[in-house]
Length: 280
Length: 196
Image (cartoon, rainbow over all chains, first blue to last red; front, side, top):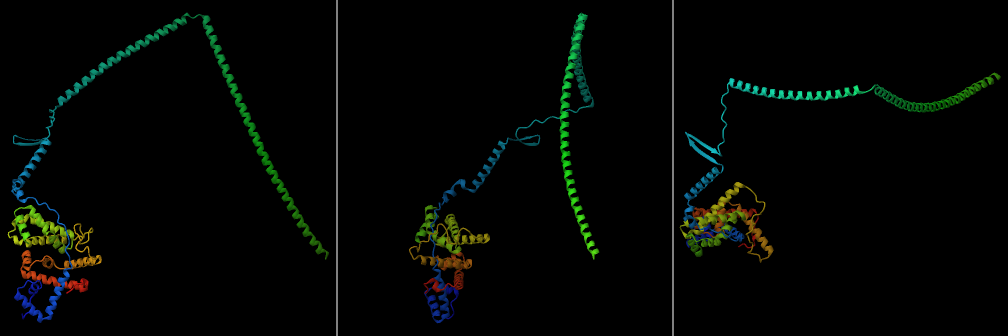
């Protein structure tokens, strides 16, 4: 081989996938070209190093493959059946939901009505009222009220009359008894009654005066005691003040005496030098 | 592969037991494809689950039994692309799990080895996964299919509905890109400990 083998040829040689003739040609070239030999050796070294990568040991998981043939041959597994069953199930669910909520569908006079639950009675609007109807209703109501008032008033009047009559009857009977008793009393009895009355009044006055004099006595005694306490206190205070004044006077007197002595001493001392001076 | 062909024939006729067996047979491969694509357990589980559900639904339409593998990976790649679009639109970060964690993942291949070596190996594996994530989606898909799933170029072209040369070209640029990424990350021969 005259020309350098290309990359593909070198790879096939490296992995021993050349024909005998090709292999011989490449080997001849490599014998003649050291650089090509070195290049191939370098690639072989890489291969050798790659052998250091080891396979990892793994345990194959136990898959359970479904029976595909049986699955595919089943009518229930066809797409059409799946879609149909899905739609049917959805429709059934929808119908069940409608029946549960009590849905009613009706068509009448070109109107479609979908209703949930029983229809509710709708209150009919009242007939239109005129002013005369309203006035009549007011008049009737007033008339009824008047009748009721009259009835109640009559009943109350009757009860009041009855009460007055019964009260007058009781009072007049009492008055009659009193007049009868007064009419039957004699002059002596009247005097006796007046005497008793005076005696009771006199006794009451005495008691009052007695009680009143006792209270006044207690009050005056308390007043005298308080006044004597006040006088005693005032006396004590005056004595204390008098003693304090006397002490002050004594102090002032002593001080005055001392000052006087000092003044006299200074006068005497000032008089003596003059005497000495005059002796010269 | 003969077992797969027989199971596909039975499953295509509606045999659920055969479909279950097919899933048991291919689940780990599809999960790991998704895991390497996303470096995420949950997304890988999602892709695997969707892929086998799709397989169950569409298997009767599979014309050629011999094309089952590329057909299945076509579904897986489409699911990966769909999840990638969804993930990019969401732009969320999982707070609960770190990449690579998950309830069904069992780290058993080296459990009897030196724990230090095992830890180093896991870190290296994660680093390379991150390097893979830096490739474009097209290059990453081809690299994973070729390097880890053992596809021929013809099968890749068939599954991705591209030409063989396109598949080879994507693989070339993918490997070249990985070489540069590894150099950037300073992953030298010593890091791997077994260079030729």
